[in-house]
Amino acid sequence: MDTSTVAELFDFWVDEGQYWLADNAAFLFEWLRFVFEGFYGGALAVLEFSPWFAVATIFGLLAWRIVSLSFGALTTAALAACWAMGLWAETMSTLALVASATGIALVLALPIGVLTGFFPKLDHVVEPILDLMQTLPPYIYLIPAIALLGFGPGTALAATLVVAMPPAIRLTSLGIRTTPIQFVELGKSTGMTPAQMFFKIRLPFAMPSIMAGINQSLMMAFGMVVIAGIVGSGGLGETIYEATRTLDIGKSIDAAIAIVILTIVIDRLTQGLVPSRKDPR
Image (cartoon, rainbow, N blue to C red; front, side, top):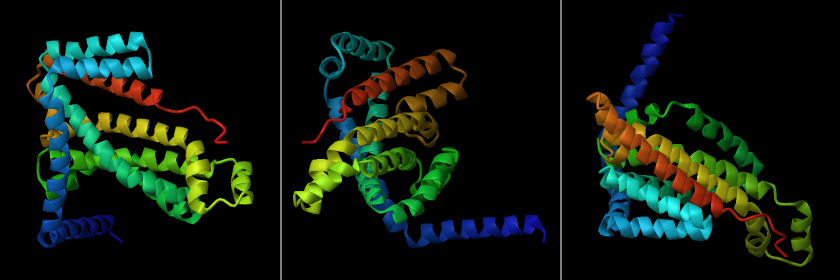
């Protein structure tokens, strides 16, 4: 059999499937774009409404309370540096995109992770899908997103959402599965209902793993924002993309520094929120 014929036939059906979706489900993708851009616009409006020094101070205070006083001071100074480089609006746009994508990803991923943690057969079905999602090049997600949603932050958010989901699903499922059996048996012996067992025993033990999944989802989302700049996402990703196209090395380095600052701040804050494993009794 001619392999080129097989490949051409496969490509033909992929293209036909895309055209069919664009023709018959346009209303659905318009609605998704509206929802995605609504989340993004809401988060961006909150961040842009406050002056830069207020946002930097709030993050500094959070870093002080969650991590340490020295990190709080460094956080405020680092965010002030983003403003000094003239990239404050782009930094807030990137933060809004990451927050929106991760928030939607967690709404979808956490329930799936809980279900796969309870039902091993479902986990065996979901695992290969997560493997595929994590091994495909991120650019792959942009192509169908552009075809179905067009250019703009909604498309970037959709692609970032897909990248951010797998870590949260995996680590939530792991946390549910690894609840010590002696505590599960203790709950059963005391007559706990399934809901009580979940909220009082399984969830406290799973929380460190769940928080680690949230942290990893955020990091994956930050890794996607530069790539998403290709589709007009706005923010630092688009700044880097435009600087690369025009060979503006200084601007690209400034934007890269701002992304590093934002990533480190969010990473340390979410790591600081991870609770230690404690006896739920």
